[in-house]
Image (cartoon, rainbow, N blue to C red; front, side):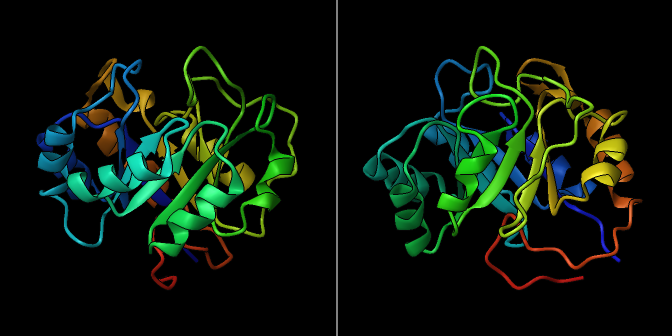
Length: 224
């Protein structure tokens, strides 16, 4: 029996990162996309990653960035993983994986890139959201009632529209390897609520799923 791994995305301060660690998060996400209210500078990102213990992954979120930009940001910000939230080709995901990075690739149930593209990214974790709004990412769009066939050949992370009130239902319904939340644990755009983070991690931590998981945020072996 196990609980899904938890990623808290869109952090903007070291204090938020420290609380996520205390609350039991397995990964935190830092957004490198200027149009996002959660966008961080390289200097701020480095401040955040410095407070993370080795067991907590630091995931940089990018939209159609080049390989050189990605690798430079990884090195300067101290990231251990990258999340590709645009139309990045499979070759880019594989090249990043070959550098020892964990790679997450976003797919959508009701938009492009769709779930059928996931098989083209065998070395990436599939981060699946229901729909696509104005900005890349979940845009707080909740999951519909029609259950899609989700990728299972690679680690699966559910994102988009999650919050302490909805995550329990979603986890029991899809039994993912991990969950990813951003706006659902905020007090305002770009500002995390410590109370909501604690509620979210407690709900997920209480759910026990029957099958061994595939680690979604790290290349380390699965630990139950």
